[in-house]
Amino acid sequence: MFLDQQNGTYLAMNFEHTFDNATTLATDTCNCLISQISLVNVGKQWCRINKVLSVTSLDKNIEIHELILNENDFCEVPDTFEDIRFTENKLLVHGEVVRYCAGIPLMMSDGCVIGTLCVMDSKPQKLTAYQISVFRLLARDIASQIELVKKNYELNSEIDEFMHIVSHDLKSPINAIKNVTSWIKEDLAEDVVASNSKYFGMIENSINRMQLLLSGLRHYSQTGRGNTPAEHLNFSCIVKDCCAKLNISKEFDVNVNDCEIKLPKRHLSIVLSHLISNAIKHHDKTSGLITIHCLANAADYQFSITDDGPGIPLELQDKIFKPFQTLKSKDEIEANGLGLAMVKKILAIYGGTISVTSQVDHGAKFNIVWPN
Image 1 (cartoon, one colour):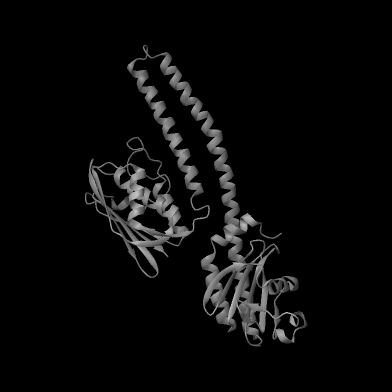
Image 2: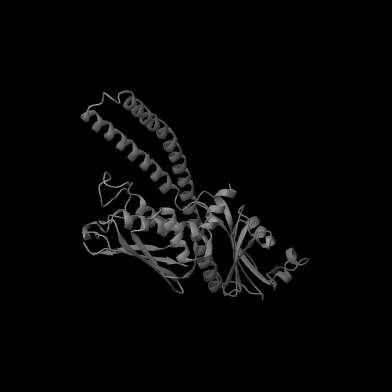
């Protein structure tokens, strides 16, 4: 069974970097002008010509793709001008006349063919036994990595289904408990003694924390899903937009430099919002300064978020990025302990990193490296 459209689209969205490297290795190993990865049912091809990678629809160069699928193994055409299958129609790839082509199916462990890997050139040639061996290994490696991504997608789908059940099946009884507690409190309004009032408060706090946790779990499980293409953005505008949505007190000053970037807006906003919110939530004063800086490099963007709060003890600095970890008691602040874990999860999707440097009573500085 081939990849279905939805599954394949998720794979294509999360595999751009791997396909880039694979097509580079294919052209270098086989000494060919063109290399190409085509995915069945996704309807896309990753084609590298003269070291430039482009993504096109699968309706282009379909003859080569179908030839490889029909052979169901490594196949090679030393000279298309001499091959009866191509004598009537010359092969053209982005304007280049193809005289040579070779390819192999991308096959998963269960025998499912998910696409093809092929190389092409403008002059006739023939691969050596060594080149064919490396070419086979490359195709096997691509298929293995795709299979891992596919399994991850399927696992995430199961988690989505579980979270749907949790958010609905647990949300309803929690709301019912909250409503019944409120009704009882109203009925006993004049008869509630101080101790009972305290117990009602404990019940309401526990319900609120459970609702916050369910909401956090749902958002955490969905982090990284959906199409989030990179956009040209003004960093300062994004930060100001995050601050406006967080409704930050005027007692806190947020300084940010101006920088033009190209990143997924939704995920960048989530990352910045959590870090800004954390800096304020965990501050030991009602006013403070948050300094946010962006540096655009050739290979990546480097962000820093610095606050003048109480700082983070050294022994806790590794723990704060794990789920359900908070620096303050959950009774002191409204938090589910998933904010920084979500930030780390988003950055991992793009091959990015986050770290913290801090001294107690001297604030904290979060450093982010986000490949562009």
